[in-house]
Length: 75
Image 1 (cartoon, rainbow, N blue to C red):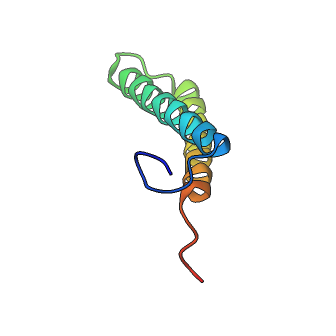
Image 2 (cartoon, one colour):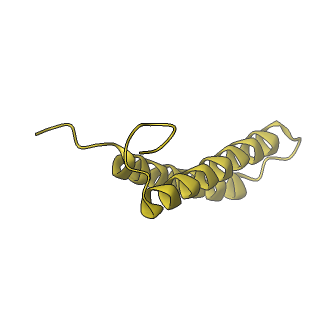
């Protein structure tokens, strides 16, 4: 059992949790980069669009991993 959630703490689960943390950090970094570009004097709409697309892809990965880590409570 894992210390944080009381559920399975297998190697696979630990790997998913580690990857989840990495993806969340990258998501925050992209958010900050987008904010910085938008607040800067010259707005590069193409660059911002690319970063937003990458951020959305990360969010999809985060959601998938969160779904894998949540116990199946529907029985």
